[in-house]
Image 1 (cartoon, rainbow, N blue to C red):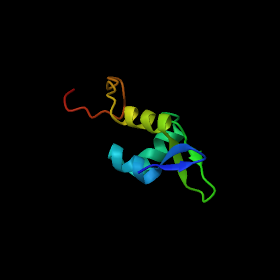
Image 2 (image 1 turned 120 degrees about the horizontal axis):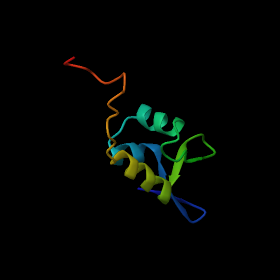
Image 3 (image 1 turned 90 degrees about the vertical axis):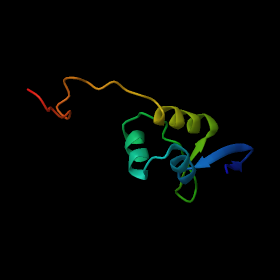
Length: 79
């Protein structure tokens, strides 16, 4: 359940993780890579997300990306 601070609804990182079914490491990696909003730092050091930031994380978590055929990380079964 989001918290209200100065009349603005904020979602905590654990709420975002649970809703998106992703790990903490995935959330931090996406933030570091600039794929999702960084959120807002609260006075206790926790990261909070506004409604629009929360929605952006959910949208990204539920998106589909094409596989780059030239990616060296892609497994090759047949040559």
